[in-house]
Length: 304
Image (cartoon, rainbow, N blue to C red; front, side, top):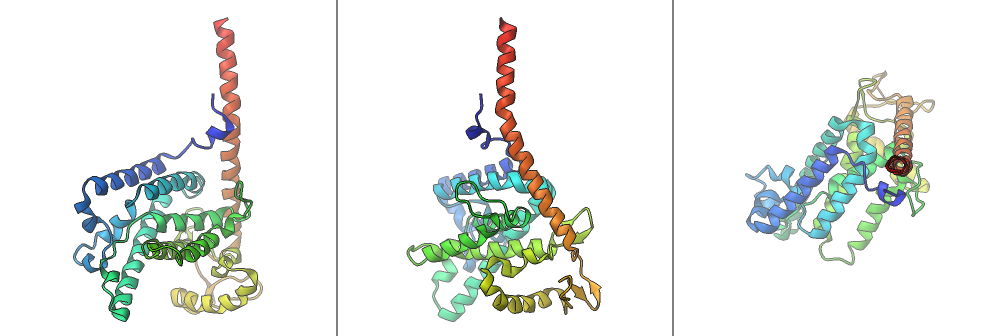
């Protein structure tokens, strides 16, 4: 008989189980064959000609703790995101965010080497699923922003910001922070960038989520937003061209025409679907023990 405590550890999607298996197998490969690390991990000095490590570096962990944390986090976040996005979009998000994250890490490492002339930036191996997990947290922020996280009683919309603040704070006290902090920062930003501007919505054939609740400044406390918004607008114009944002609807426009994804109603519908998917998931997990109990009682009566 399953219980409410055990039902939360079931009903993981097949895609997430497959991706978790990839992470486990990748970890075992580099543990039993250490010579594969220079070919799979992102080592900036060797990325050319081994350019494939911009992709492979995200799908294995160098430590046991890393692979356990990544697989568990993937399974739980995938339970909420994949039903809302769909399996194809969920997989696409992971691939794009992983690639862009490690591309940014590579460019940053090369830039730091030319600035400091320290070879550690060229030969430090970067690997792990942290960037994708940070991006998935942004997805949780998007679909269920006002849902309180179990036990810690913090709204989901603050999870990416809290993780970044804690990671940056801990970097002052750990020696290996350079190996994970860049992937967390770039993973968070690339996840937001993809969902904000690139994610296609099948129901409207539009892209992105232009709602104010998902603006870049929403990652910061309220009192900082008047400072963050003008800076974010500069980058928005770089991505989307000149925008004419009205005070009435805060929609995006280019040369008087609305940009794709400028319908804030669709953003609200997406959040409603996310909340509904969460409620259905929780309802299924609550009903599972009751169904099992009824089945056991029925079997007992039949045996009598």
